[in-house]
Length: 143
Length: 143
DNA sequence: GTGCATCCTCCAGTGACTGGAGGAGCAAGC
DNA sequence: GCTTGCTCCTCCAGTCACTGGAGGATGCAC
Image 1 (cartoon, helix red, strand yellow):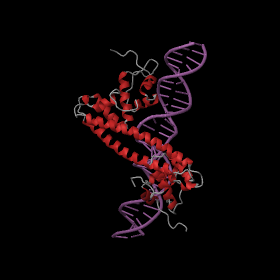
Image 2: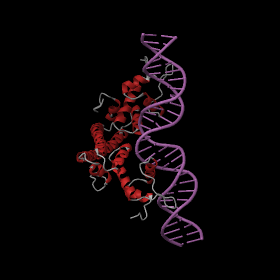
Image 3: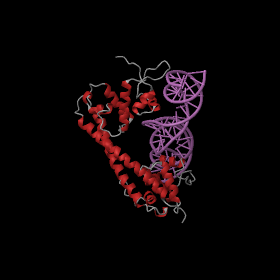
Image 4: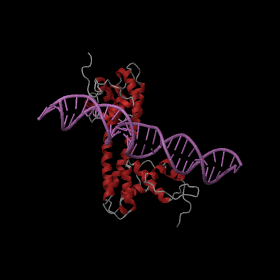
């Protein structure tokens, strides 16, 4: 079954939610292959491109860096290698995400505290400014 | 009480944990003032610079964008204005942070699920690759 | 006076895009 | 056939918040 038509970059964009400029960018950095072109020099994409772009998009949404996604894509196309590498990449990323969650949680508490204690008075007594200026008054974990 | 000596950029760096290059960068974009120089053209910082840089650093750690910090710094130096603006900035940021926390939590769950379900077999049966490739199998909230 | 650390400026690079200029292709309506 | 308006093309510059290197000057201890 040969490809009947292929979709334009706009259609691929609509189906994946990735902007045309970004798709072209992915092509330019080798994350997406150069697709065949129409007579009028337009990119024509097939289902395989849709899949690959979905993979990339999903990876980016999960916060993977492009290098990590590249590695995962390499693995994805040779299905008989053991998946230790994919596992390691995901595990490392999970650790990072968990650390970030802790940080961000502390951050939210600090901000909530700041907002709550601002009695909408003058800046001179505003805790938001104080909290940022004064280290001693800071409830943030990492100093 | 006039300033006795002033510290070098290296010392300021050590005390704040902000790299010299970054301090110079902050100066170049107007976030930090141009400090007086020594005879040998070195930057000499005083306590006020330490405070301001701490303010900036703290703001960045809390995830404020540089424009927001600039706005807060402007407020901080004129203490008689009402702090509605500072309050608004913090409130907006708090909302963003809370949204981010939710997203990141979902992400962690997804990643944990991915890692847990990888039976260290072959890539062909590895859920990490699957999860990234296949939209249907995805537990992630935003599609 | 001789190392060596620190400092200086300037400039280019990073990641992951984004947007604009300037032009060509294409489909629909008149 | 012609015009309108959208999509597409390439190329290039800009974004944010830094980071790092080149090439040279300064400062200080031994």
